[in-house]
Length: 429
Ligand code: IMP
Image 1 (cartoon, rainbow, N blue to C red):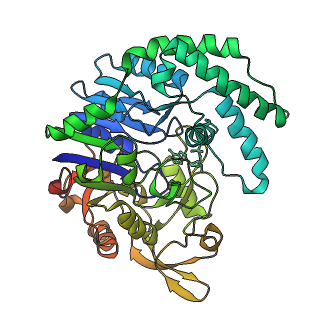
Image 2 (cartoon, helix red, strand yellow):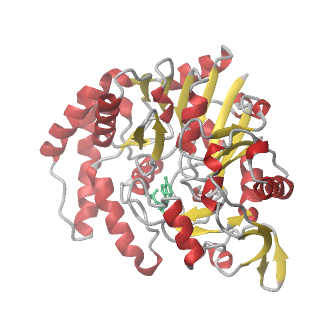
Image 3 (cartoon, rainbow, N blue to C red):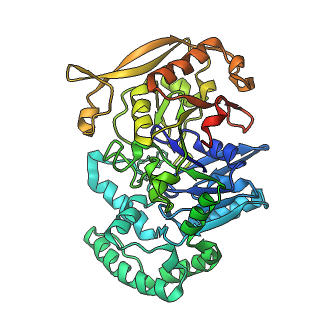
């Protein structure tokens, strides 16, 4: 079997897009399994910058089939804009397919996202306001409209009438304007007409590709600690970014997964609210944000930046059954004299090395740090481990020791070439 799951090992934005692009060149099928256009995957190649939100980053390779899996929620308007933009940049793309079981995001989801955030008051999550939470709520409540229904005009009309009547009562309760059926149906039917050729039962296709020993890459979005169950609830997204989500969101079973790579930055970032023990609200945090251009692809918000947290990575390794780590943005830390790494937490007088499940407890932990020698110079030119400064190599060794997870790949810049493959055997199993 040649199957690989790529997940974010922190709170998202770990530069998974670049990795999926690099490894996507080797894959026959790339299938994304969770989230919607709350994600933002940037790929820089050949002097061009591509920004993906819904389309799997693997689409840039013409021989690849790029699948929007059943675990995703899809904004049709956003998807079409993204497709047109990408085609204008690069006409020779891979084949795009959309699972008929993926759910559709409608404007009332975005309206409800804003209203729910307002209702949370001081405890607001800081969502991307793309309607993601309400779309997944509909899925669980059995009110969701799936792609397979959306592209069949009569079915779509029947389902939209049923759902919209209910949504409008909800919107009225909030004192919000309601959504008019005819205008919505007309606008979205046009999107459905354009998307129809892409919609199939992709689950069979993915299964057959796995069975035929094709290289199948399962592309994660967001990060482990934004997972609805395993993350820092309620400051999470509404899907399953952990490796188990690759099965739930594409229709394969756990034994179809061969290898799992967890992508982490050499430091930590977080957008939105929620505890962040190693957060740096000082000039080093500023330095990382500026040098790493840590601003959200989707919202443009400045990301919160902090030291690498190995408690987070140890837990990510366990939750995802990681085969290996991909450490990205090592170049950004270059120029900091002493770097710190959290190895455990103090919690109510005890030393712990896990994240308390109760987020209010997690907010009380204080990290224990190991201080290490920093490094200097332009890492972007390095192409082998031996090219890296010795203190950067020691930093990577320390990560491996503490997490008991081998480093498979190190990324030292945004471009495809700025990648050091340390252990190729971990990639496809
Ligand atoms: P939602 O997914 O828009 O509901 O947002 C829920 C939380 O997940 C917020 O804290 C968002 O900032 C965060 N989030 C969602 N998608 C991403 C992502 O792709 N990268 C980083 N954070 C994200």
